[in-house]
Length: 215
Image (cartoon, rainbow, N blue to C red; front, side, top):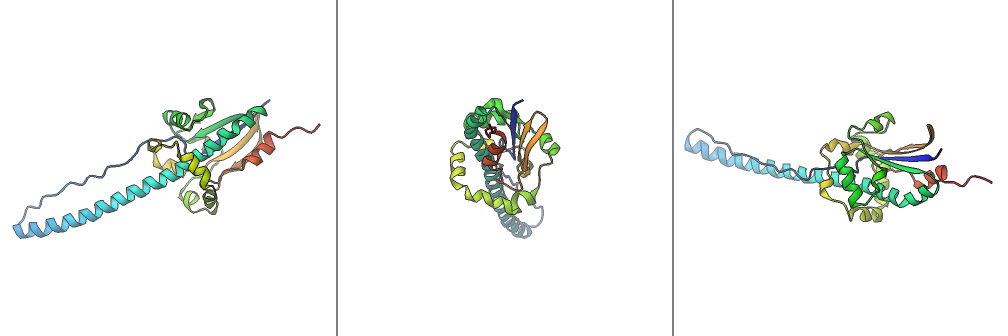
């Protein structure tokens, strides 16, 4: 039976773009002097709050963009490895925590073979495989620093990225992925990403599923 390599990313399949922050002015029913002072103070406070909210929205968008870009980088790496996997009789299956329409977006823009791509909006496969999730793993695990050694690969992946790839559920970007190789029901290789961009080395995967049998 042929082997199967399954890669789970922390979100190559997303939506939503930006949030518009709207503040409404309030009316103070009191003396003219009190109204004048209060409206001036309220306006200044609201301006600061609005700027802070806009800054947080921009920061949030940048963080989500970077985390998703790491996923697109992995998808691109897997796409380039597919020919070698095919020649060894290994089927590639990529699973992302997003909706089917977002999976289609990645497949068309990267591009990535649609027949290898699966959407898992509820992250059920991730839960079954015990993959890591949370703020600590995503931002503060030492393993996450590895991604900064792959600047060229990230630059290559960003060329076809779109802001429309931002997820509805922002918490999905906190999901870490992993790489697994099965032969039938037998698990030949398993590795969980310890942090953002801490992907399995494909040379290790090739060693397991693509090595030439000894004569």
